[in-house]
Length: 86
Length: 86
Image (cartoon, rainbow over all chains, first blue to last red):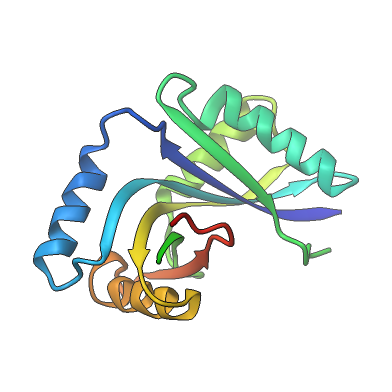
């Protein structure tokens, strides 16, 4: 079975996020002052072959730990899409 | 009230996504052949002041349409976090 998995990788809290700050300042200057605490990171979507959703998530967690996310500066969240395609 | 909103911006389907292809090839070469159809985009998290979750989402949709996403090449999804902070 194939699962669609979404990963969100964001700078760890407390670390500098110049890209997020730049977006926040730009939004504030461009008529959107209600946005604050902006952070910018990476979104990754992938299909994973696995028996169960839990297996797919575990596999993607391993991938993120080892390859996709920087363990020193980034945190990530994994979301397995409910409607997995066959 | 302040809502935590997550935005996921990904290359539109059918368009070239060289970064996604690079990650897919790297994963395949690095002992993760079960990953396929990989796409890489931007994850943005922000706090939005709004009366309701629907208002917050509408506001972020406007921001994405006008500023954060490229309407020609990118699609985005908005998710208002249930547990909004005060």
